[in-house]
Image (cartoon, rainbow, N blue to C red; front, top):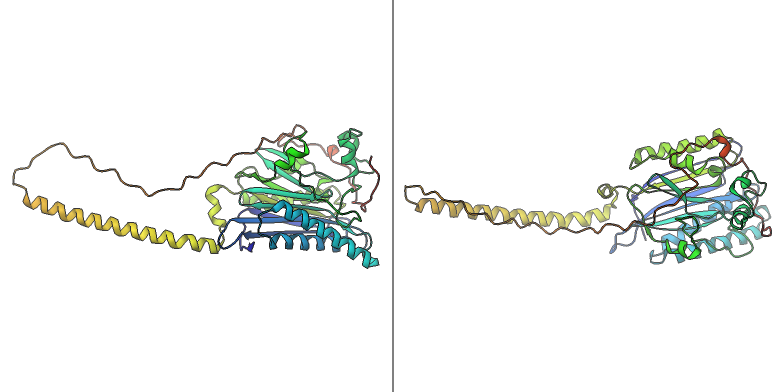
Length: 385
């Protein structure tokens, strides 16, 4: 892929250390590309990593992960995004582990990871750990990533209800992370409905995003203290990119008002309206479009002028040959104008309707519904619940 100066999506990204942390161990990156000079399809890669460990080790792991995964994506041709992300995440996990074992000060460090790759209007994603990815569409919010935590496994097994999970001492015991001794496996299930099988969730990869859709990537410093419904109600409804930065800052402020016990990082992406997409075309692509367009306009103008001049000449000759008596009659029908060919744009096929029975649009839950504030603990390899 080739770096582009501008993204074809509206992007807002902010990170805050929180109220009780000296260091910000979160890292993130957002990069815009076009696939190649011959294929100027736009692409965007965004990633959030939350470092865990002790004494600055977490931020080292998170920074290594962001750099390695972003570089692997940039070096690819985007022909196999899921395979590229899987290999990049595995490489980052192995590198973090090797550095942890070489340096005693970095021993035990690790990082979570949540990344999205949007190629034109198609979404691909992968995650490891408890950093999350949400899709907002049509007044509903859906977590499309899966938490790799002890609590999530217990709920999946039916051993705990969501109510019992709130405030549980194992709420953020991470079961999968970059830097673990076991080779890390990226989760590429993209959940659009509750109860989907793994195969169905995998098949959702490459789904079409629609104008107005929003994606939110965030670390658990946000989701520990702010519910999905509150994230939804804070984001601008409809195509209002000018309010996106304000919404992201408001979410960070809300988490900090409730204690800010952890670092908070948010990336918000919005798909622009079709007619607004041209403002996000890369300059190189815009140049290639402008030259042939001007040539066509010039040729059409010359033809029209020639036709008008020829018609005027013939009309004057006919008038000079007519007798003095004026003859009236029905006017002849003019020939239909020949319009230039236009490109027919096939409407995008919308993905399945989001099913979010537990999240009511624009709801304002009470503070009691928010998970109890907790620190992100060190990753552990505890047994299954």
